[in-house]
Image 1 (cartoon, one colour):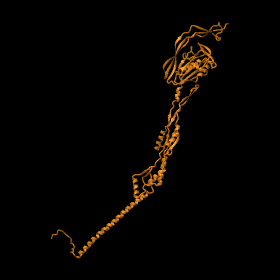
Image 2 (cartoon, one colour):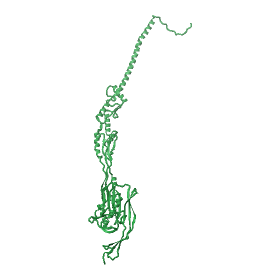
Image 3 (cartoon, rainbow, N blue to C red):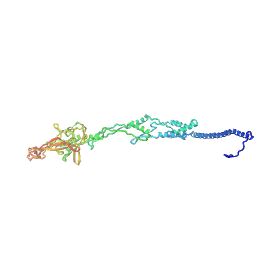
Length: 512
């Protein structure tokens, strides 16, 4: 037979009903009944093992949570800040001490000295300004910060801890606001020290015998202090915690009149000098000194006139004048007050070149030894006849006059008159005199008796030629005006005649 495949020999299957066949079925059925029990047992055993494992894991996690939470129950949680101090891990006592220490440091962290020119008025700090911190507030903030995460279940405590990791807890103590009253009271005590009015300079004394005849009381500056500005600066520095010193800057108040202003009103306008002849007698020089003593120290108000005769007075022995040679009609004669004309001439030269207005002046009829003819001023004072020198103070301020006979070397003297007044700036004056006409000498001769028999005694003696005949002349004098030293104008101030003189002879008065 053709076999399509090979099958190994198999045991014969008993027929149905055979005892072996029955036993096999019973075994199979029994096995089928036991299988679910085994499966359940296996599943039960596996489930028990899994549950035990899960319980063990959860227990470990719980224990970790407990340990983590319990670890911070007596200290501050992490990321807890009061006044930017990290309190995490600190005990309540440590945290409170740290915050209080910072409060104290903050309270003492600012100080400001109020000073002026090296003097310290007061040292300000937060306490002096009334700015303080409340210790109770600090305690309450620290206490509240410590209680974070200390209430509720473990899970709630843990939740607080976790939230702090995301968002730190930060609180700050406050400072009391400064009151204006405190600072205002402090500044009110300082301000009077910086309140003073300026004082003007003024002429205290006119001392005509001194080299500088003016004693000037100098000006002083006043001051004021802007309290509002100082207050604002203090508050700004306090807010910024800027310590150091605040130098007060008072406003200086200038006077209206300074020493320079006063000096400008008493500048030397002109100094006139005439030499005293070596032939001048002591009496003549004394007469000049007496006249000058009346003039020296004179103050002339604006618009007022100076009269030589009114100021000097009558030339009498009672007024201190002496007999001395004086010129009368071109002749030397003794008279009380001889030499006073040199005083008047020196005053005239000073007044004219000080820009003052000459109201009355008369020239000598003959040249004098101490100045150029045409630049002189004669004076005369009697009951019946007066020749005066008058000028006006046409300046806007007072003028001051000094007059002295000064010894320039032993037995050599000069007359000096100085006039002071408001400055003329760059203007100054000078004089120029020129002869414009000559007058012929007279052909006549004059004879006069030598009453004192000085040169001629007897009538039959040869007459003595006392004075030769002399030509005369006319002189013009111009006031020159200079600006910055440059001549800018000339003004005719006088046209004076020096008379031509006839010859004079002395004759005797006695018979032999």
